Amino acid sequence: MDSDSVRGIDRRRLLGWGGVAAAGVAAGPLVGAGLGHADPALTDADIPPDTRPVVAYDRYLAKLAAQDKFSGVVLLSHRGRTVLSRSYGMADRERGIRNHENVAFNLSSAGAPFLPVAVLQLVQHGEVKLSDTVGTYLDGIATDIAEQVTIHHLIIGMAGMDAPVLDVHRVFNSREEVHEYNQQWARQATLVEVPGAGSSGHTAGGAVAGAIAAQIVEAVTGTTFWDYMHEHVFGRAGMRGSAYYTRTQWLTDKHIAHPYMRQPDGSRVDAVRNLDKDSLSQQGPNENPGRSFIGNVFATAPDLARFAHALSDGTVLDRPYADLYTGGKVPGPGDRLGAPAFKAYVGPLHIINGQWVFNRGGGSGGVSASWTIYLDSGWVGVVLSNYDDLQEFGEILQLQDQAITGQPIDPPGGG
Image (cartoon, rainbow, N blue to C red; front, side, top):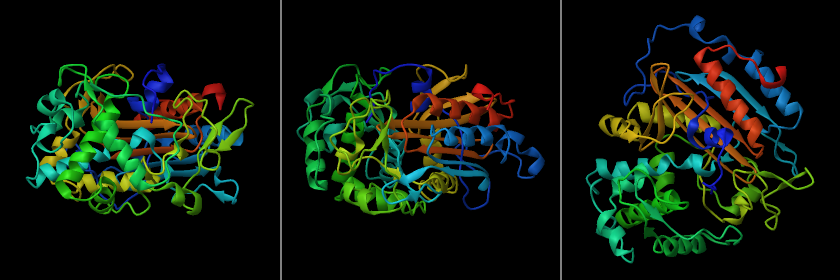
């Protein structure tokens, strides 16, 4: 969960303005949906020098890790070929488990792009229409929402809704408890703007739109949203280490990173083992992601690249629907480094150096995540961290942009 009231350049970059990094998957350029029109004859000479090991970007990461300002996984890949892979810090200090490429990290709102895939799969199979209103599938929703808000509005971020602020201090103890809470919360949503007018509404608008869309998936498929996603999105994409993990799994599975939240005295605490502690970070003030028994997507860095590949080859969506998923629909708010911004089902899109670039980021207590797909050139980027040091994370993303685009890197502090 994220507080949309927080502003500033690092915050904007983290939660949707981008950065790059990546992971390796099966060989082959990204194709379709703007997913790759690059020359397959490109060679090692075409790989920007600062994306390689032991150069400026890599050295900067090592410097941050040595100063205990970064813990996590960074991967850069080009057309399925790993160019740089680095892991730093501990996934679980108590058990002495280090971070590594196959550790899954909480994505926070960086997991949002997966929900529209599920919806578009149902559209592709003729089970729903993007023009269908919420009331076609759900009962108990406010009448104006049921009659005016469409599935398109929900997944493009233009539903114009708001909802009560979520109780960030409540500790959930079962999937059933979380499911019931989400159902009741969605039915408290109110319409505060004209649907399609240009925004998700107010503070909780994007989150409640996602909750309603997930409930439509459940109504149509007859299964829980989590189970549908595991089988039809993560499973199809070969994302073997990714899931909606429960707190029980978080505490016992050595392949899931624990979030370490900064405290007033400068120390960090394990959020999952200290549910009474709050985050101080701008990304999720007063939050503790461990309190939700099940909630956000967890993913490994290679799995996010596998998803990009599965999207490009028609595994998760047929080609026309992949085009629909990644295509810009309307101008988006703000811009990224002066680049035009657009809204798409996949999330924020920009045109940078003549190519489409998708990025989604997210953050919460002890969580910083960002992944980027350079849709035309075949680069994919992932940065996953179990720290919530926002300033350093924003600097990492900036240097990744420079490395991928071939711009000279001058690391902050001369690192």
